[in-house]
Amino acid sequence: MTSHLRTLKWSTWLGWQVESNWANPWLFILYLVVKPVTGSLMLVCMFIAADMAADAAFGRGVPPEFLPYVYVSNACYALVGAVMFGMSSVVIADRESYRMLKYIFISPAEFQTYFLGRGFAKAMEGIGGAIITLLAGLALPGIRNSLNFGNMDVGWLVAYLLVGFVMLWAAGMVLASAMLNMSRSSMFLSEGIAGVIYFLSGVVFPLAILPSWLKPVSVCLPTTYWLEGMRRAILGPPPSGSPLGQSPIAGWSNFELLLAMVVSTLVLVTAAQFFYRWSVGKAWRNGKIEETSGM
Image (cartoon, rainbow, N blue to C red; front, side, top):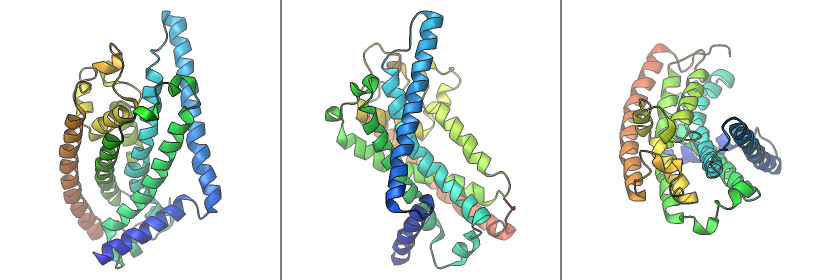
């Protein structure tokens, strides 16, 4: 246990230093503030442009409740990108750029706990960016009315965050394990999966408007339940009669959403552990841990 805690502590510290590029802490904090704010403003401008185009083409704009839906979804998805895909990028960076992965593997550090610590550092960055994004939304009229922190369900929010982090860590371990046995162009795997999950989890497009053959795929993704729960805890249920309320899981209670998350997370964690052990063994036998592709 002491070895795991020590590895977690120092890998989290290392992850934070790498993410900040060893910069001055106050300069990095300024970057953490500017990055999500500018990204959120770009998203709002894109929504306004789409609303104007829809009004000109069809005589009616996008329903107003779509803006806070997309805004909060993107704020929460930042955590998905930070943890899930950030952990897979650790393999690429440490093996290809820094060429230190082989030394970490043979060191007394716990290899899997090392990835957990790096993912925890990215989670702190993602949570900070999400909070700043939500606070920036209070300055926007189309979001301010829906983003009422007094109506936020803190209990369910904490529950979704805790289960969600375990789910994202398990998914990140699956991707990181796959990266161990890929040498060239492995970064495109995580980028491609990121786009698929972004599209199918209801970040921008509600599940109700997806083709019927894609809806079962969306319902099978743990991130779909997590994002739905996070939106509910922050915004509350969608307005009556809104297209957002026609999702296949819109009628589920918070308990049912959390239960689905817990079950899918347990399945994902079990699969991640089996896949990790198989991938590490194969990578060690084939020399993939110390192999570099010159990227």
